[in-house]
Length: 352
Image (cartoon, rainbow, N blue to C red; front, side, top):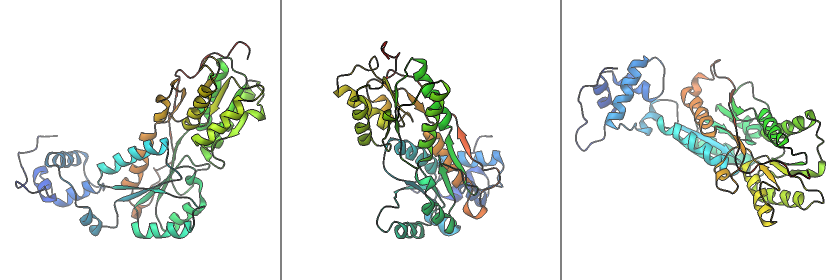
C-alpha cells in the first residue's frame, strides 16, 4: 500500500468521515462501507482506509450509524451465571466488538427467574440487537432460542448439545478432550478415578462425562458409581463432592473435575484434609481458566482457546448483518484444544 499524503483534521476537532476519505483519497461512501464492515471494497482500498482511520484516530458516530441503516451495533452475550469461563469469553468478544465500533451487552438470564419470558422480550425489543451469543447451557435453552428466532435475531451457539440447522455453533471436541485427559491419568497408573460432572443438560458436560466413561471402559477399568458426583460447574458444589469422595472408605487416587472451578474446590478440600498433592491425590480440571494457575499445585487441565472462540462468535455477527442472513459458508466451527500438564498430576501411589 502506498504512503498516505500528509493530512490532519482541524486542530481541536475530532476527525470526521470526510477527513478519513480525504486522507485515504476515496469517497465518503467507501469509508462508510469499511466502517460498517460491508463488502464491495477492494482489499488494498480497505487497508488504506483503515490506515487513515488509525492515523486520524477516527471514532464513528454510533447514533449516525444506527440512523443510517438497520443495525443497532449491539451484540448480546447471554450467560447463566458469572464465572472464569465468562470472563475470558467476555474479554474476547468485547475486544472484537471494539474493533468494529460495536457494543457488547452481557445479560445474565435464567428461565427460572420470575417473568423470565417477559423480561427477555422487553430486552430484545429495547435493544434490538444485531445478534446474540449464547453460552452453555443457554445455547440449548429452547425458550431463549425460539424467542431469538421469532424476533429474527441471529444467534451463535457456544458448545450446544446439538448444533442447530439455522445458526452456527462454536466449540471444541469436548468428548475427545475428556478421553485424552482420562488417558493421561490412566497412563500415570491411576485406576480409582473420581469424576465430578457438570450441570445436567449441559451439552459440553455430557460430552466430557461420555469421554471419561468410554476411555475407562475401553481400557478395561470399571467405573465406580460412588466416585461419580454432580457438581454443576460451581466451586461450592465441588467442595461437597470432594468431601464425600475423599472421606469414603476407599477414596480415589485421582479426581477428574469437569471444569477448573470444581477442580480448585477439590484441591482446597484436599489441602484442608492434609493430603499431599499430587503424591497422594492427582487432580485435573477443564477449560484452563485463570484459576488454574492461581492455585497450588498448578492445575493439569484442557485449554480451550476461549478468547479466540469469543472473537470468532462476535465476528460472525458483525460480518453478516441480519438483513443478509447466514451465508452457506458460515458453518459450525470446531476449535483445537490442548492438554496442559502441570503439577497437579503424578504417578499413582503404589497401593492404588
